[in-house]
Structure formats: structure tokens, C-alpha cells
Length: 106
Image (tube, rainbow, N blue to C red; front, side, top):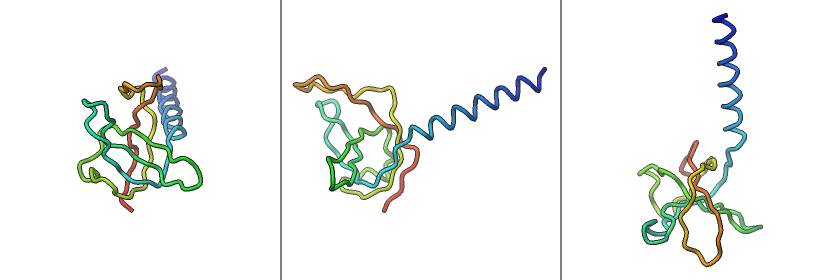
């Protein structure tokens, strides 16, 4: 019985890990400081380098200090969290913050 429970727990763990990896978005981009979140800005963001379309902007959660440099080119993988971005925008847009799974300087 214990073996069955352990196997079931292992299966659930593996399936949940795969789901998180599938939801990750990996981009080439650069870091930007948009201003203090307390003053209706979004703090540190990852701006996708994409010249063919509109660049996506990812509001970051807990960017490491070593990457807190505006204009810093990076390769990063992020996933959407349930934390919403506080925005007092004229248009009611719901945006979410993104957590970093991996990040490297270019």
C-alpha cells in the first residue's frame, strides 16, 4: 500500500512539474526600470526584442540584484503568476506579474 501511495505522489509531482515548464515563455530581450510601483509604475520589466511585431513586456517578480540594470540584454524564461499588476490606467486592463525560471546575460 505504501508503494502505491509513493508512486501516486511521484506521478502527481512529475505531472505538475511538466505543466509549469509548458507554461514558461522564453525570450531574448532586455531589462528596463519603469519606475517605482508605489507611484503607478511597474518596476523592473523584461522587454522582448522583437522587431517584426509589438514587443511583449513582462512585469517581473523578484529580479535578482545582479540583473537590475536598465538596458541589460538577457535571455530569460518566465511564467505567469496569479499576482496582478496594480495599474490606475484609463483603460481597465488586467495584467499579471511574471516569475523568472532562468535568466542569463547575453
